[in-house]
Image (tube, rainbow, N blue to C red; front, side, top):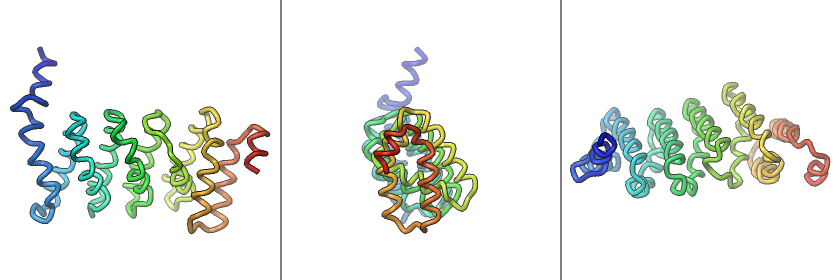
Length: 211
């Protein structure tokens, strides 16, 4: 009975989702009218939580949430959206898996707290197999040379854990190398990153193939 009651509260005709879902989406999409920063922060968090309970609501409002993550001037809002997208990747993997590029972009956020939150979220999702890696690991590798020591240490921990999975670093090395070499990275940081990554390529035949 408790389960049925909970389901009715969330999805029934008089549910929280049906009553407040449209209102929350309206507030989030019209920041030009609803300008209060605290209201926008609360509404965005509410939108994200409602998206986690309904795949239909999630799919309908995912573009709005991604836009907020990209454009909000509030780092707390951006961090909250990153965490929410991580939750949605677990609940509705098929919806988020196609939009992971937007998550990786937050690794270049100008706010350290957002970068850390994004790195930790991606670390969990990738190591737990919740998202497929499609050539974006180079963005994670850049964090190895981040000016913030906590971010650099988190990146080292990620690749150390990733290396315990069958040939994972080797399998993605070429993609990472291509992304890193195509950027504007200085030569010395680039060499340090490549050297660190190659330390996880232990099989001689793999080393020869990469060479």
